[in-house]
Length: 433
Ligand code: URA
Image (tube, rainbow, N blue to C red; front, side, top):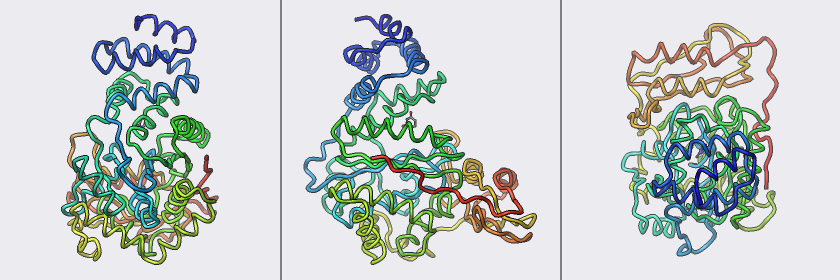
C-alpha cells in the first residue's frame, strides 16, 4: 500500500477502505508518513468529506493510537461529559458532583483554556493545592473512593489526534466536520467511559457558529460513540452570550459553589441540570424526566455540594477555602464598568467578552503563557436587562492596571443597547440521543 495512492483515491472522491485509514494513522504516528503527505490527505478529506464508516474507522484508529484507559476496575457505570468550549462554562464543576451523588462514576480528563475559552483544569488548579496530575492508579482509586476524579489529559491519549490537530491548525483544515467529530471522539473513546454526554455549543463564543453546524457535529459524534458501543447524548446549547455571570478561573469556582448552594445564575443551573440528567438517564436507563427530578433533588438538598467538597479534598485542594468563598484569593484591582447610556442590553458577545477576560489575565494567547487565576469579569447585567446610564454593567478583576483600557475597549465592542426588549435566546436548542 502506498500513501500516494490513498491521497489520490480521496482526491478523486472515493471512499477510503478501513485498511487505507489504518495504514495512514499507523504510518503517520510512527513518522513513516510525512507531514506533506498527511497534509495533502487532510485537504482531500476537507474538500470531499467522509462517509460515516470512514469517520468511525478514523476515530477508532486515532483512539487506539495511544493508551486506551481501562476503567473496568471501577464498580458502577462510568460517565463522562465533554464541552466543545465556551465562555463562563463551568458546568463540569456542577454536573460531576450531581451525577456522582447519584452513584455514577466520573473518571474525567479535561483540558486547559486556550484563546477566548476557559478550561476546567485551569479552574481547578486555581484552588490552592488541587492536583490534576495523578498517576493512573491514583486516578482509578480516587474515582473508586469519591466517585469523581478530574485530571489533565495524559500525553499518550490519542497521539494521532494530537499530531494531526497540530497539522490541521497549520494547514487550514480544522473546520471540517468529520475531522472535528473524529478528533473529539477519539479522545473521549480512549478515555474509556461507558456513557458520554456532549455539550455542543453554538454562537459567537463557540467553535460552531450556527445551530445547523452544531447539530450536524452533534449527530456525527453521537453516531460515532454509538457505533463504538457507548451510550451517547448531545445537548446543543447557546454560546452567543457567556454562561452564568463569572468568567475567569477563581471567579468561576465561586459561581460553581454558589450554584451548588442554590444561589447561582438560572442559565448555568439549567444547562448543568440538563447535562447531568441526560447522563443519569443514560447511566440508569430511565426517562429523562425521572433523571431530571433526581438531579434536582441532589442539587437542592446539598448532597451535590457535599460531594463537590469531597472531590476537592480528595485531590489535595483546600476545601476550607472553597467552603468560605470569601477566603478565595481576589485580584488587587476591581474596576467597575459603567453603562454609557440607558436602554436594554441587547447583545453580550461571548467571544469578545472572553477576549476581554483574557486581556485582564484570565487566559492564554499561546499554550505556554501563564495565567492569573484571580483575573476575569463578573457580569452585573446580562442580555435582556434594563439599564440606566451610570449603572455598573460589569466588574473587571485584574492585578495589572495597564490591561484595563484595552479590556474595556474590547468589552464595549461586545455589548449593544436597544430601546426595545431583545428577543429571548433559546438556551437549550436541542438534545440528540
Ligand atoms: N476540538 C478538538 O478536540 N478537535 C477539533 O478538531 C476541534 C475542537
